[in-house]
Image (tube, rainbow, N blue to C red; front, side):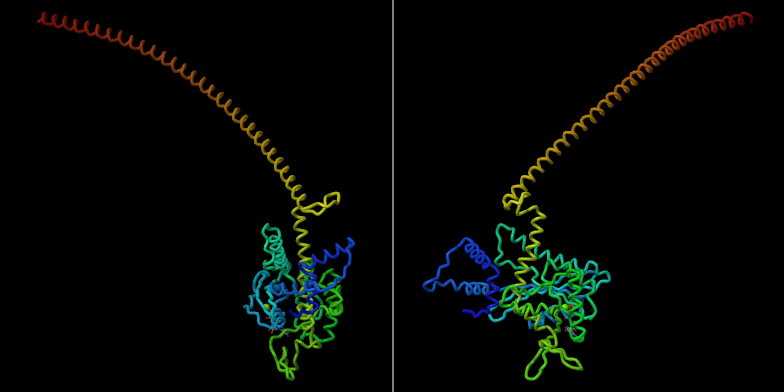
Length: 448
Ligand code: GTP
Ligand code: MG
C-alpha cells in the first residue's frame, strides 16, 4: 500500500466520487439510519486507499496561469517552483496586444504523474493603451470552461480521460514598486476574480527592503479589499490544515524571489541569487516567501485549487451559460423544474414560435401574391387600353390613307382622262396641220 499523507486523503475524500459517498451518508443519517458496530474486519476501511490507488493510476493535471508584466521573473519562478527547466523560447514583447501561450508538460515525482500546463500572458502591460489587456486572458479562461461544458453536454462523454485545460490558479505578478498597485493590476484582477483562483505575488522581492515590503504588502491588501477584488483564500475549514492555511492567508501577497542557479552555502547546494553585497537564498524563509508559496500552492492546496475551480468558478460559468440558454431549476412558482421539463417547455415554445413564424410567412406570401396579382391585372388593363388606343389609331390612319388613296386614284383617273383628251386633241391637231401643209404644198405646186 502507498503511504499517503493525511492531507492527500482528506483532499481525495473531499473531491471526486467521494463527495457522493459523503452525500449518501448524510442522507441516510438524516433518514435515521441505524448505527451498527461490526463484529469483525469487513474491508471498506480500505476505501481511501482504493481512491488513492485509482487517482495515482489516473495521474493529475494542474494548470497555472501566469499574469504579469514583461520580465517580472514569471518563467524563472516556474522553473524554481517545479525544480526543472521548462524549455520555451522567450516570446517577443512588441506585439500590438496580449496573447496567450500555453505549454504542456508531463512531470513525475515518485510514482505520481502530473500533467502540468503553464499558460503565459505574453505582452501583458507592453502596450501604450492597456485598456483591453485583460480581454484575451478572460477569453482564454472562458474558452477552457466552454470546452469542458461542451464535453459534459455530449451524449457520449469521455470526462475520465478528458484533458482538463481549465485554469486552476492564476499567479498574479505584482511589480516590486513599493508604492501601490497599478490600475492595470486592479482592473485585471477584478475581471479575473470570478473566473479563477488568484494568488497575488510580489515579484523580484529581493529588490525591495524589508520595511518597505511590509508596508507594500499592507497597501496591496487594503487596495484589493477597497476595490472588491476577491483573491483566493487558503481554506480553513479542515482542521488538519486550518492552522497553517490561516497563518499563510495573513502573509498574502507572497513576496518571492526566483532563481535556478545553485550556490554552495555551507555544505549544501542552494538556489540563490548572488549579488556583490550578498546572497539571497530562495528557500530561506527570512529572505523571501518562496517556500510559503510552494507549500501553499503545491504541497497543501493543489487539490483545493482544482476543486474550487470546478465547484466555484466552473459552476458559475456553467450556471450562467445554461441560464443564457433558457434552462432553469425552478418554474415561475418556485417549484422544481427538471431538465426534461425545461427541454419540453423550450421545445414547445420553439415549435409555437415556429408555427407563428410559418403562419406569418404564409400570410405574407398570400398578401404578396395578391399584390402581385393586382399589379399584373393593372398592367394587363394598361396593355389592353394601349392596344385599343393603338388599334383605333391604326384604324384611323388606315382610313385616312384609304381616303387619300381614293382621292389620289380619282386624281389619277381624272388625269388619265385629261391626258387621253389632250392626246386626242393633239393627234387631231396634228392631222389637221398635215392636211393644211399638203394643201399649201399643192397650192404652191399649182402656182408654179
Ligand atoms: P517574459 O516571459 O519575457 O515576460 O519574462 P519573465 O517574466 O518570464 O521573466 P524571466 O523569468 O525571463 O526573468 C527576467 C529577468 O529577471 C531575468 O534576468 C531573471 O534572471 C531575472 N529575475 C527572475 N527572477 C528574479 C528575482 O526574483 N529577482 C531578481 N532580482 N531578478 C529576477
Ligand atoms: Mg517568460
